[in-house]
Image (spheres, rainbow, N blue to C red):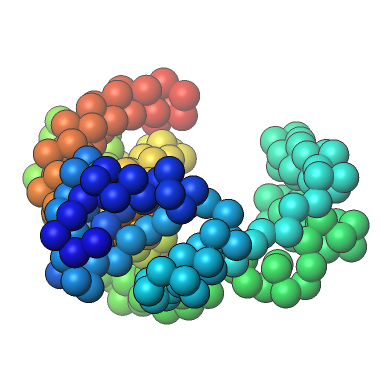
Length: 270
C-alpha cells in the first residue's frame, strides 16, 4: 500500500474498517485521510469490529499496536445511578448536608449498589489533581499567615480600589483567569482566594462575590492547551496548534470576564 491512497486500495470496502486518522512523523492527519499517499511507518487509527482488526494483522502484513479496552456497561443499574446523583444534588442544594458528605455518601451508594466496582471507583480518581491540591493548600495558608496575601490585596486596592469594589472584583477575576491558563485551575483558585478575601475585608464588603469570581475565573481554561487536561487531550487528535487555543479562547475569556463581573454582584451583593 506504500505510494497509494486508502481510496485507491478500497480499504474500507475490502477490510470493513474505517480509518479515522493517520499518525506520521509525530503529527496526526485527520482531514481527507482517504486521499493521503501512504508511506512506510504510517500508523492508522481504525474503527471497526475487533476480529477484523486481528485479521488485518494476521493475514495482510499489518502490525497491530493495540486496541481500546472494552467498557463494561450496566444498564440495569442506570436508575440507581441517576437517583443517586439527583439525591446528592438535592441534599447539597437544600443545605441538609455539606457537599462533601453528600458526594461521599453518593459514591458509597454507587459502590454498594454495584453500579461500579471498587477498582473502577479507585481508577476514576484523578490522583495527580488530588496531590496538586494537597500541595497548593499549604501554599495558600502560607500566603495568608505570612501576610503575602494581605500585601498583594493592598497592591490591588491601591491600584484600582479608588474605583470601588466592582473594579477590585474585575482585577481579581483577571488575575485568576490569567493564572489558570498556565497552571491548574484548582491551584489558581487556592492561591487567589486568600488575596480576594483580604481585599474584601480591607474594603469592608462581603467576600462572597469575590470568592464566586475566583471560582468562575478559575474555570476559564480556554486560552492554552496546558490550562486543562481536556484541552491537551484533544490537541493531538484534532490537529490543533498552541495558538489555535489562544485565538478562540481569548475572545471567549474576555466575554465571560465582562458578563461574570456584571452578573456576580447582582446575585451576590457586596
